[in-house]
Image (cartoon, rainbow, N blue to C red; front, side, top):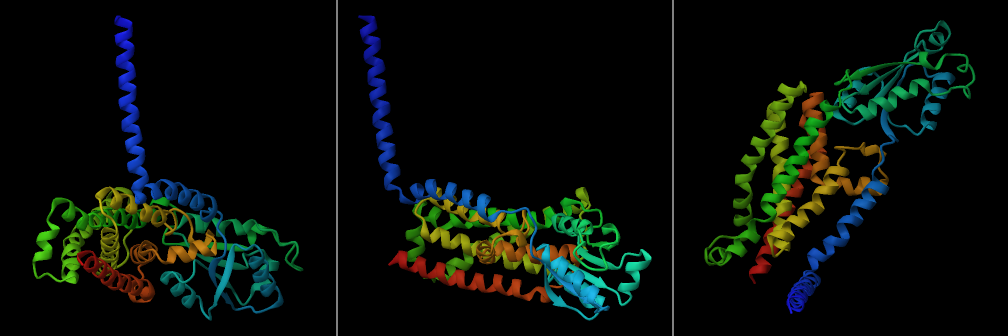
Length: 375
């Protein structure tokens, strides 16, 4: 009898577990956002890591200053283009113009070919010089590898030792320390995660707590509500930025060569854009869990496609287009330009303008969607 009783208890327990299991499966099938995330997140990760992420640096935008303008200098440029490591986007008249383009981030490197290029080929001196943005160690390593490229196909240069062809000067990070490039980019990643996470649950939390009806009863305009929701978090984001940059400088000796005021201005633009994106998510979801899932959906591309971990130039064109839509991509360009290269924000105005337009457009979308939900 005891064995029968024990078996009955086990059977009843299994039946209860099965009932709960069926109930959870049915609930999951009805929760379309969660069910979609189960499929979409692994699919996005697969596509990002397998297709978009590429550590092989290709098509680096470079400037050429060719004071020689001879057959041999043109042959050298064509040989470099054939490697597909570089893409010539500028022809500057002076080294100063090339350095300015390097500081603005328009190019990643500049090749200087002196007027006595042919003579240097014969007397053993390095006939050309690379000026390289060394803040990204992957970029500088790709240019350094060009020193060993074969030139046997170029008449008159085949007898020259490959290592004697270039002198490489690394700007902004001559020691090639990865942390120099990581810390300014890390600000963008952390702000993306925290700012979107805070605001994506803002309206949902009001709805779950029953406070949304009170807000509806007040004369607050939807746009006023959106602005009031994001302003407090701007100060939170500025505090986070100050902590990361200060500790990065004190602990890892990351240089700060730009203007603090311009860094704060760029950061405020990015925080506003990220908070606005979070508000849009908040108007599209019904629970805080769904809001968190949508935040992860935005966070993954922001980390992998923004240039934080992998060179932007190594991505396929379609991935580059997608990355241009992400506020994090534009902020990392601004942050690294201001902090590491001492660039001014007006020299990178297209990135700042995008963040401003994104914020205004996002606020309008969020306010319109919130008004619809009230109706």
